Image (cartoon, rainbow, N blue to C red; front, side, top):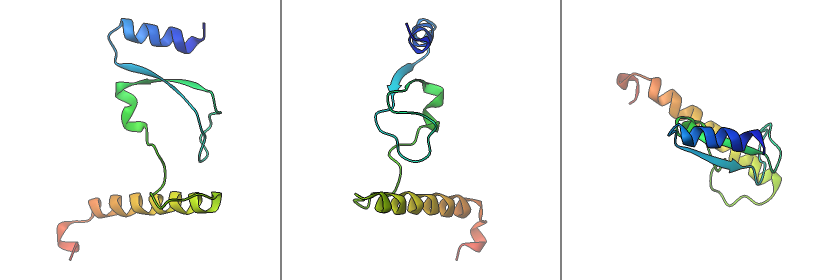
Amino acid sequence: MDDVYAELANALAAGEKSVLARIIRQAGSAPRTVGTRLLVKADDLHRVHCPIGVAIGAQTPEEIAVSIVAELIQVRAQAHAERRPAAEIR
Protein backbone atom coordinates (compact mmCIF):
# COMPACT_ATOMS: atom_id res chain seq x y z
CA MET A 1 0.00 0.00 0.00
CA ASP A 2 1.34 3.43 -0.91
CA ASP A 3 1.93 5.88 1.91
CA VAL A 4 -0.65 8.23 0.40
CA TYR A 5 -3.38 5.61 0.89
CA ALA A 6 -2.41 5.11 4.53
CA GLU A 7 -2.30 8.88 4.97
CA LEU A 8 -5.79 9.17 3.45
CA ALA A 9 -7.16 6.39 5.66
CA ASN A 10 -5.71 8.08 8.76
CA ALA A 11 -7.11 11.48 7.77
CA LEU A 12 -10.57 10.09 7.12
CA ALA A 13 -10.51 8.09 10.37
CA ALA A 14 -9.65 11.33 12.19
CA GLY A 15 -12.66 13.02 10.58
CA GLU A 16 -10.59 15.30 8.34
CA LYS A 17 -12.22 16.10 5.02
CA SER A 18 -9.71 14.85 2.46
CA VAL A 19 -9.55 13.64 -1.12
CA LEU A 20 -7.05 11.71 -3.14
CA ALA A 21 -5.98 13.57 -6.28
CA ARG A 22 -3.91 12.37 -9.19
CA ILE A 23 -1.90 14.45 -11.62
CA ILE A 24 -3.35 13.66 -15.04
CA ARG A 25 -1.66 16.41 -17.03
CA GLN A 26 1.20 18.68 -16.15
CA ALA A 27 1.21 22.33 -17.13
CA GLY A 28 3.67 24.93 -15.92
CA SER A 29 6.62 24.10 -13.77
CA ALA A 30 4.90 21.96 -11.14
CA PRO A 31 7.43 19.57 -9.59
CA ARG A 32 5.10 16.60 -10.05
CA THR A 33 4.95 13.98 -12.75
CA VAL A 34 1.84 12.61 -14.42
CA GLY A 35 0.41 9.81 -12.29
CA THR A 36 1.57 11.27 -8.97
CA ARG A 37 -1.02 10.79 -6.21
CA LEU A 38 -1.57 13.59 -3.71
CA LEU A 39 -3.62 13.90 -0.54
CA VAL A 40 -5.53 17.17 -0.49
CA LYS A 41 -7.11 18.16 2.81
CA ALA A 42 -9.92 20.71 3.13
CA ASP A 43 -7.51 23.17 4.77
CA ASP A 44 -5.27 23.00 1.67
CA LEU A 45 -7.93 23.71 -0.96
CA HIS A 46 -7.15 27.43 -1.01
CA ARG A 47 -3.73 26.49 -2.43
CA VAL A 48 -5.20 24.60 -5.40
CA HIS A 49 -5.61 26.67 -8.55
CA CYS A 50 -6.86 25.02 -11.66
CA PRO A 51 -7.01 25.48 -14.53
CA ILE A 52 -4.17 27.90 -15.07
CA GLY A 53 -4.29 30.74 -17.54
CA VAL A 54 -6.95 33.04 -18.91
CA ALA A 55 -9.61 31.35 -21.05
CA ILE A 56 -8.61 32.51 -24.53
CA GLY A 57 -9.03 29.19 -26.32
CA ALA A 58 -5.29 28.53 -26.36
CA GLN A 59 -4.19 25.43 -28.28
CA THR A 60 -0.48 25.67 -29.01
CA PRO A 61 2.27 25.82 -26.36
CA GLU A 62 2.88 29.45 -27.29
CA GLU A 63 -0.79 30.37 -26.87
CA ILE A 64 -0.94 28.53 -23.54
CA ALA A 65 2.12 30.48 -22.39
CA VAL A 66 0.40 33.75 -23.34
CA SER A 67 -2.73 32.75 -21.39
CA ILE A 68 -0.65 31.92 -18.30
CA VAL A 69 1.28 35.20 -18.47
CA ALA A 70 -2.02 37.05 -18.92
CA GLU A 71 -3.30 35.49 -15.71
CA LEU A 72 -0.10 36.41 -13.86
CA ILE A 73 -0.58 40.03 -14.96
CA GLN A 74 -4.24 39.91 -13.94
CA VAL A 75 -3.47 38.54 -10.46
CA ARG A 76 -0.68 41.10 -9.95
CA ALA A 77 -2.98 43.97 -11.02
CA GLN A 78 -5.76 42.79 -8.69
CA ALA A 79 -3.36 42.51 -5.76
CA HIS A 80 -2.02 45.99 -6.50
CA ALA A 81 -5.56 47.45 -6.69
CA GLU A 82 -6.48 45.86 -3.34
CA ARG A 83 -3.47 47.55 -1.68
CA ARG A 84 -4.19 51.03 -3.04
CA PRO A 85 -6.13 53.49 -0.83
CA ALA A 86 -9.56 54.44 -2.20
CA ALA A 87 -8.42 58.07 -2.70
CA GLU A 88 -5.84 56.91 -5.27
CA ILE A 89 -8.39 55.01 -7.35
CA ARG A 90 -9.87 57.78 -9.52
